[in-house]
Amino acid sequence: MNDEAFVIKDLEQFIALWSKTYNTEGKPDWSHILPYYDEKLYFRDSVQEIRGFAEFQEMTARLARRSSELEMNILSAVMDGRTIFMAWEMTILFKKTRRSVVYGASRLTLNEKGKIIEQRDYYDLWGDIFDNVPGFGKLYRRFMRKVFG
Image (cartoon, rainbow, N blue to C red):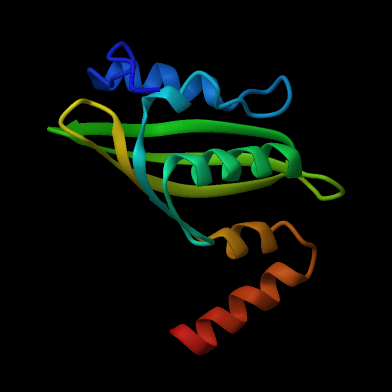
């Protein structure tokens, strides 16, 4: 796992690795990118907070089991020092649902060795999914405007 060959060197390498994770030929596969994560990884998104590589690996396995298809399109990415920020759109097909597009962004921090030590994903999971449920999306958006402005 801590092999020195598995370090993020530049933005182009990172985008190439990340783009292989999600594909249009079936389930997502993180096996090629997991060695680039540090054992002490901290991950957080709209749903969960994870500490440690083992728990993160379990999360990726759960997502693969729950989704029939998962595809990610990186819209833009920048790297400043040891921080990578990218905007993306993810198309996901959960079992027995319509295909949904989730729009988001991720901030990744590399440690001094070039491994991913922190990942923070930002997205509106429920809004993007509810928008694809006939009739419900409009109700959800009306509720959000009324309650949150």
